[in-house]
Length: 502
Image 1 (tube, rainbow, N blue to C red):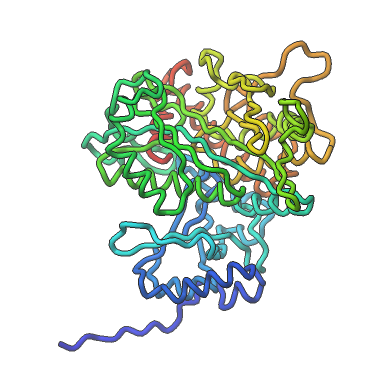
Image 2: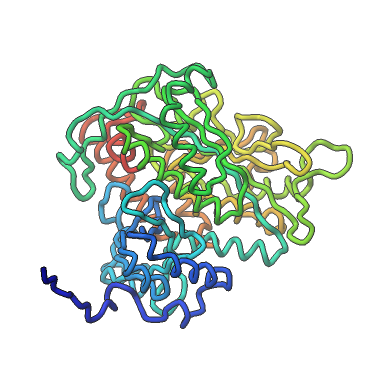
């Protein structure tokens, strides 16, 4: 049988700019070496998912054939800026015409940007058929500069700042999430649209909960979480434990400490793979902080952090001598986190729903802007001693953008370590008791909008995030007013907005 041969004339519109990586010297020697190995192995792969984190911390991707990716690897791939423009409900929140490109010429008219794969993040997804790989990309403008709206670029800049001071930040993940069983029903498209999310997935609890760390409770999730743990290990993720938390089917996953960028990449992959793994097995995983389900307890994300002296490998947070308290550097770092906490809080708790957890009615909620040794009611907890000494920030929600949340921690901590004057203090002089963390998205957005977040993010990204959150908050408040719903309980709006996407 004769088969027609189809010949592509040009793939330039799809694969960015020829020699984009080489022309702009975008890769290190390590990345270049990894790229050569990838090219040698591409014949063993069918598809590559080229991914980047949007401002909300969600993975956006295109699935490319291996042949297409061979060109994309060194030329980059054209991507629509849509993920920069939509809020959490897919409403267009950034006026890319009236407010031309947030100062970014290429964004005016919603022009494309170039996504360049980072070869160091390339990995085969185990157990996939067809054989599929995953790789995270970095966003660039056409002149080869990092895209001003790139969350990954923000964290890269912080890494470079630490390197310039002779420091190496170390970050550990402790993430709570919910495992539920899917109930067959409509896919949630009724009433859906731009800024109008359809019904959330219908689910049932997998157990009754409220027996913290009870072995029998873990047995009820183990048929899914144990194979998931093996799958995560096959991806190279340094998983340490799977534990059953308090809520019905509430799971806590912890990971060994990593570099800052590796930690953010791991969080993006972990959340994405976990949701996919569970969905393929008739379950739903959600990183929404407090789902609108009976007796569900809020979930948090605890960000563990320390700083090494790069030359010696010494942990700067480890106190010298007989004292068991935190070192002066640890205290300085903590002071930086406290001083910047309100202005950057939006980056750790970015959703309406995330503030449900930060109410004093939750006995273990980190409601106070303060630090203490082994105290779970304050934002910062000093943990461990010696080489393992570190600070645990307990305020974040599990669906926060990991790149921005971690960057905010490193930025504020470095401000403290270097003695840079802070814009405000966690405990103003003469105040008898500490301040409290923001209690709503509205409060956090006001602090973000009037503060100095531009010092970390740059004006375009700070403005973009402000517009996205303003849109999300406006839609929520409009829904409350239209339906006459009170805010004392998790709302149907929150369930539709976050439960499936996150």
